[in-house]
Amino acid sequence: MDVITIFISAIFVNNILLAQFLGNCPYLGCSREKSVAIGMGGAVVFVTIMATLFTWLMQHFVLDTFDLGYLQTIVFIVVIAGLVQFVEMFLKKMMPSLYSALGIYLPLITTNCAVMGVAILVERKGYTLITSLLYACGYSLGFLLALLLMAGVRERLDTCRIPKMMAGTPIALVMAGLMSLAFMAFKGMAQ
Amino acid sequence: MVTVSILTMFGLGLVCAGILAAASKIFYVQENPKVAAALELLPGANCGGCGFAGCEGYAKAVVTDPNVPANRCVACPKESIVALGELTGKTVAEAEPLVSMRRCDVNNGHVVQRYVYHGIPSCAAASVIRGGTNTCAWSCLGFGDCVQACPFGAMKIVDDIACVDIQRCTGCGLCTKACPRGILELIPLRSRVCIPCNSRDKGKAVMDACKAGCIKCGKCVRTCPAKAISLVDGRIEINQKQCLEYGPECGQACVGACARKILRPIALVNAPVKENAASASDAGDNENKEAANA
Image 1 (cartoon, rainbow over the protein chains, first blue to last red):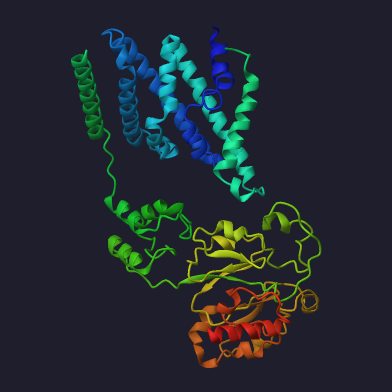
Image 2: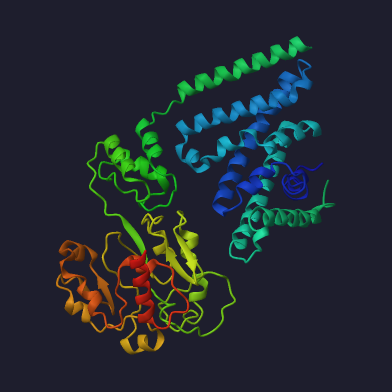
């Protein structure tokens, strides 16, 4: 498949939140305000690309070489968790400005299934390293886009009269469903 | 297979742990333990009443900057402030506890609604449409922007007017910023008297619009022996500091002098307003009696 098609389809057609339904916890938890959504989305973009790079190397140079494919899930969990911890320490020392920008979101996504999901999907599809990174970039940008759209809608919802029983999470879930339906319109554009 | 799995995971764990242990040494950042201790003392409400970006910002500033006093937090109890002073080695000056006060008595004043508003339920939105729904352009609109802003649940809307719960109010001042009309004002909790009218209109206009509005007759200004009351920019301002310094000897002369009986103690302003009060002065008397009974 064309590299650009992979990138575009990762953002829109196979949007990780709205079409694959991975990582829905921050989708509801971090979409109250646009600034929070941008912080979380940015951290996910950063960590997903880093995690994909390292898990790809892990898969191809350790797991495949020693025929340990059945340990993929647990190994990826350890690698991603360790990586995020390491990156946090590294940023704190070397790039304090980026560290404070990502703030609390960096440790929060250590165990996010969207990050893990991208790492495993990349392996299932058998992409090369460059394509994998591009795919991870597209997916995480899709995450950022969906989160930002949701935050925009929820900021508008704050000024609406909502029946008490629907206020808060219920109306947010309805919005998430409608947004997912809207994104279904991209289906058929690419695989 | 089991042995290989266990050994692999053991090895992987060991490698990760080694790398992280090394990283924690290499990338170690000296952090002042006092900042964490100071943060522990603060309430964590992130109200911004201290003027810093959240409790963490203030904790950092109070520890590192010698010019930042330890009594800036308005929301935490006195013991915490004393502890914060001890922690940072700063002498704590007694901070005057402040409380939010509503400078409007629109319900007692029987202010007429000019039109029915069906827009976004927010004071900020309602106030821009032809000067708000009430005939008085200085009055409380009662959509509760202050309720939304208050992190301590001290504001509530009773009978379409904002009421301050003095017990809960910490004097952070977020409501004073949220109110599009500047009706809410921070005054010392000890204040003996306050003026629940915000209007800068001329006396005649106030008299037409509201039965409980200040008509700027100036009697209180002339009566006050402490010279604490003055007419500033078209409305009566009470210098609470001067008033408190003078003490209670005056017997609240201004309250007696007020032509419309609107000057009164803060507790009576913030109490929920009875709806079917016959007139402004009657309502004021009723409230006085209620307070006396209580």
